[in-house]
Image (cartoon, rainbow, N blue to C red; front, side, top):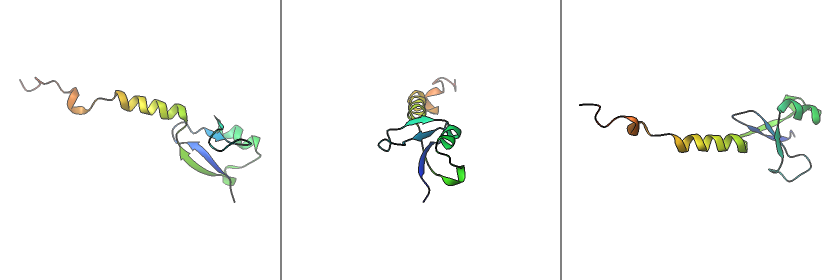
Length: 78
């Protein structure tokens, strides 16, 4: 059975949960992770999620987006 590794769907970093509670690991480069555990990409199954930094940036971007209807001037047809 291949290990399941969390991979950020935005920045492509992976979470290294090695030796600690699942979900509490640090995020880092995929290549370094594979080297550290002597793995090949084919040896691992990936679960695509967003790392905390990318998730926060995405939430901030959504928060500050304005709907299309609000960006049109109210006197555009005059």
